[in-house]
Length: 451
Ligand code: ATP
Ligand code: MG
Image (cartoon, rainbow, N blue to C red):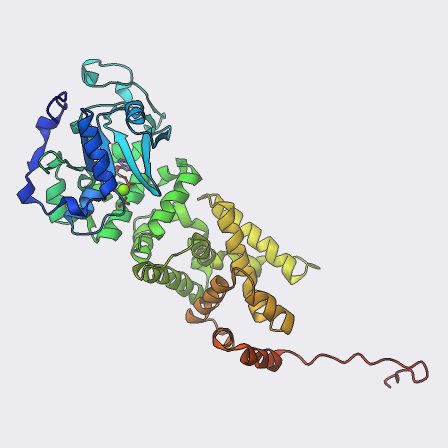
C-alpha cells in the first residue's frame, strides 16, 4: 500500500473518516473487495464509486459495485486474467467472477471541446489522449485519463461522485455529494447546460435517480430540461432502449413515467404512446398506468418483469388506434391485425430500439388476446399450451382491470387454470358449440330443398 505513486487530485477531496459514515466492508460484494485489494497490492489506487457508495450511504442495498482506478484498461487486463475491455466511447474493463461482473473504469479527465488538442499544461496529468466531441458538444469518445479530482468532476451527479477506499475505509467527496445526500437532492456537477450537451442522457438519469431515491431534482439541474430535451434525438435508439429499460424496471416506473412527462422528456422515448393516449378513451390510459404500477409491484415482490409485456402495454393504445383507423377492404381480421401490429412497432422503433425477441413476444401477447376470446375446443387447448399463455392471460386481466368489459373472460380463464382435467373438459364443453354430426347422405333420399 505504501510504495504507490501519489494519486493526483487527492488533496482536493473532502474526507469523511470511517467513524463519520455508515459503510462497513461487510456490505460490499466480496468480489468488488477482491478487486480493490488486488489493485492495491499491484501498486494502483482503486476506489468504489457511483451507485454502490451512494446506496450504501443511504442504507439501501446497492444494485452493483463500480470501481474507479488509476490503472489503465490495458494494465487492468494484465492484472486480471478474467477481464476484458469493452466499449469504445468509454473504455471500461469487465472483470468476471462466475456470473458476477465488476465494472472497472480508469479515472477520466474532463476535456472541453475548445480544449481538445491544445493546452498541454491543462493535461499534465493525462496519460492517454483519446477523445472526441461532435459539433454540438456531445462527447463521442472519452478515454482521456486524469486524476481522481478530475474523474469526480466529470461524473454526472454529486451523489454519484463519492469514492470509498479500503485505505482506512474513508469516503472522499469532491463536490457536495454528502450534503446533497443529506438534503436528498439530485444535483448535476458543473454547468448544467454544458453537461447535458455533452451527454443528453444525463437528463433521463436525473429523473431515474430522483424517482428511485425519492430525491428532488435541484432547480438549476432541472431548469434546462425543457429547452434541451430535443438533444435526446441525437442519441442512438439502442442506447435509448437501454436507458428506457433502466427507467421502467428500476421499481419506480409510475413515478418515473410521471416525471418524464412533467419534464417534457417523455416524448423522446414514448411519443407514439403519448400521442395515442391523447386521443384514446380512459380505458387505455388506465391500462398504461396499471401496467406501470404492476411492474413496480412485481419488482417489489422480487418477481421478474419482461420488456415484452411492458412494451405490449405501452403500445396497446397505439395498436388499437391503428386498428380503428385502418381501412383495408377485403382483408381478414388477422391480416389487419398483422398490419397494425407492424406499424405500431415500427413507430416505436423511431424512438427506442427494441430487440427482436421482445417485439416478437409483444406481438404474441397481442395476438393471443384474440385467441383467448375465441373459445372453441381446439383453440382453448392450443392457447393454453402456448408458451406465452401466462403473459397473455395477465394482459387480459390488465385489460379488464382497466375497465374493458370482456364478459368475464378473465374469470373464465382463471377458473380454467385452477380446475382439474375433468373440470376443464366440462368448461370446454360448456362453451364449445356442439359438434355437428356429419350425416351420410343417402343417394336414395336426397336432402330436402327448403321452400
Ligand atoms: P445504478 O444504481 O443504477 O447502478 P449508478 O449511479 O451506479 O446507478 P451507473 O450507470 O452504474 O449508475 O454508472 C456508474 C457511475 O458512473 C455513476 O454513478 C456516475 O458516477 C458515472 N456515470 C454513469 N453514466 C454517466 C454519464 N452519462 N455521465 C457522467 N457520469 C456517468
Ligand atoms: Mg452502478
